[in-house]
Length: 563
Ligand code: SRM
Ligand code: SF4
Image 1 (cartoon, rainbow, N blue to C red):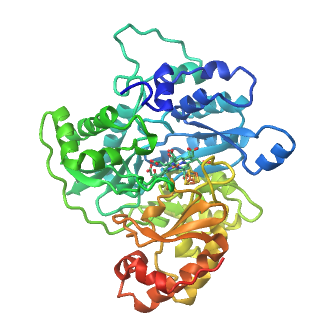
Image 2: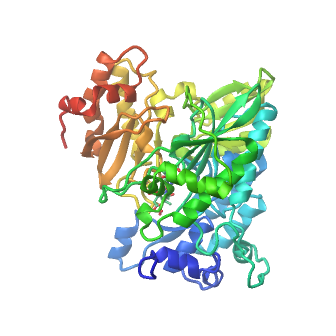
């Protein structure tokens, strides 16, 4: 590949001395923002430079520069952290961030609103509670997701161990992180020594995601990952894993050659084969993935381009043996483990708490952040963040349940049974005012839209139907809207494309129903479809399955669009 062909970011990675760039120097220069090269390097360290988009216009009119601030995304494998880590994280968000903590759709935390001058202190504080930000973002293996449901017994422990082996294997090994943020000593390597034996100088062509599900329970949307790992249990022992490959949601509206894709069934591996097989997959993507055009750099395009059979041959060549065919998969649940549950009929259990759009904060009517702090400090549960932006308190004794419920109620926090099924299953991405790629509102728009939609759904007697609604501020798909019953995807300011017809179990993508519908018309536009669903569905038929069966063309005929 000639120098002209490779993408600018590839050059930045290559010249960046294993993620060093000039970040260390820039942290001392007194400027409020980073250079373009450092912005790219910083992503690998879990840091995005953003600006407050609400202030842009006013600042421009005043002749001032943007209000720059950093977003930090940490890495919490499988979303599990201790009570102490949670509480320290809460303090860090209060001290350096915008006082909110956001649970992401990949079950980790983001902090927003950190000023450049506070960045190093924030990352040091995060590391002090034994959480890293390295690998939060960037062209490497990102935070690995796993079903957040607490499970008892050795089997759950083995699967967790297998995940942690992968986390270790695919974590960047560069010393840059310690040098820059933790004032570690600079190391000198011999000529033939590599700081990154797996990733090399240029890391991966693009982000790379792993997700782990237990067979039957697809709460993590396992098919949306570059590698989806499905654990098979037999007689309470892990019998091995089915791997699915090449999932991804992102698309670019202006380029119809881009598309969301569900991962393809690939192979069955034993526990012993898991890590080596994943490494072979990752390195094939490293060596053959597109480094010219980032729009086509994800594994899904490589697999579509070369074909799954050729891809398998390359993986098997690296392994030195043939892979067993994938097992047939059956899914029965996608829901997020909300509410009280007992662990194996013991006195101990867990509570899944609904968090609207993953944002943990205090408002005048809802003191979610304060009450979680209080409950977690007193009862010391283990915290499990979920891939649907919620939170589980694990390890709660039966005798403490009533008191916890009372504390939550007093703070205005409802248990899931008092929240509509529609709302429990809905997600929105941050978009405005922090996301630089956001086109339309998302997190700030979804709650009011749901209030209106709840009324419509109740009118047709469908309040108990688990209809999933996912909204994003652009087509990138950060809440995985292309595998929801109703996907609202921001297209231009104030207007959304509507997607219908996915399978809520996460095994079928939805399709574009209507384009550029104004926000205020979204519910009215969807109402006729809900009406036909109420009248014509078959027994037990889910909303997405109904839309798929009837066909979007026929559903479009009944819709009139205003706006
Ligand atoms: Fe995402 C970029 C937020 C999960 C696909 N995503 C971004 C950025 C960093 C914008 C940017 O590049 O400047 C957003 C920061 C917004 C902000 O203000 O915080 C952002 N993505 C998020 C989060 C916080 C959404 C949420 O509501 O939780 C999620 C953080 C996950 C994490 O902890 O790592 C998040 N993003 C996802 C997912 C869902 C998933 O992985 O399960 C996807 C779709 C799956 C996939 O990767 O294909 C996703 N985000 C993207 C893309 C499109 C990637 C592509 O292949 O085209 C971008 C843009 C890009 O990478 O160029 C993006
Ligand atoms: Fe930003 Fe788009 Fe992702 Fe929403 S979907 S967070 S607007 S990149």
